[in-house]
Each structure stands twice: as C-alpha cells, then as structure tokens.
Length: 90
Image (cartoon, rainbow, N blue to C red; front, side):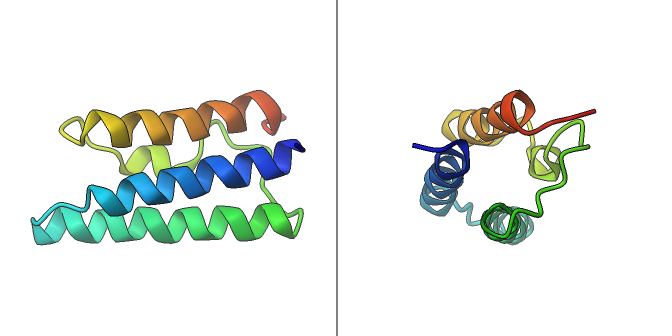
C-alpha cells in the first residue's frame, strides 16, 4: 500500500470515528462538521498531489478540544503523526 493510500485510509477511519461521536451540543457539532470537511479536503489534496508539505501540523489538530472523546483525539493525532512522518518537509 502506498503512503498516499495509507493516509487516505487513516482519514477515512478518522471520519468514521468523528461521525460516530458528533456531540449534541450545537457548537461542538458544528466543530465536528468542520473537522469532517477538513478531512474531505485532505483526501482531495492527496489524490491530486497538492498536499502542503510545509506545515508543522495539520490544521484539524487545532480543532480538537481537551474534552473530546479519547477515540477522536487518538484518530486525529494518528493522522497528524502520519503526516509529520511521511509528508512534512520543513
């Protein structure tokens, strides 16, 4: 499996976890939907070979809050770690 496909799979897993954990609070639900949009954008940029490789971290990580479910935190951080290990070129 290529690193691009592995990244896409991690993004899809992350999407699934986010969808399963969308909070009932409207503000947090909106944030989760923004995170889902960000994941869709990441998948599209990977497929078109346009991923910005000069980021210190993926912007989706800034959308996390400390009271998010552990499963959500781990999924997003795993995706970010993969980005840092295989794409980041500072």
